[in-house]
Image 1 (spheres, rainbow, N blue to C red):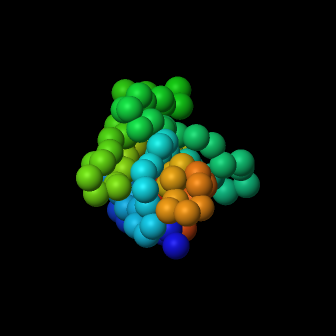
Image 2: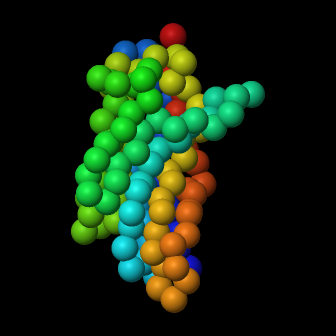
Length: 120
């Protein structure tokens, strides 16, 4: 009854930019944390950035100064603006959200993932 739908991935040259978006919909009472994770081929999924319900932000060290996470609270949407992309940023990017679901309590949800490929 809750869905996270991502968009914005694609192929870009090194040094380029992309912006990902993730919109949550369904029986949502409120959303706590929203985050972006990525998973490169053959590697474990890792946290890229997260933003709490109060707006506190955390970044993985390798993306600090290049990526910006933001939320549009009224639209239950989180964004990830990615600048100065590097080949090592390549991977599938997943949206994650901690959501208070109507009659169900707090639950974690994942988006379907969107591919980001950075060519050198």
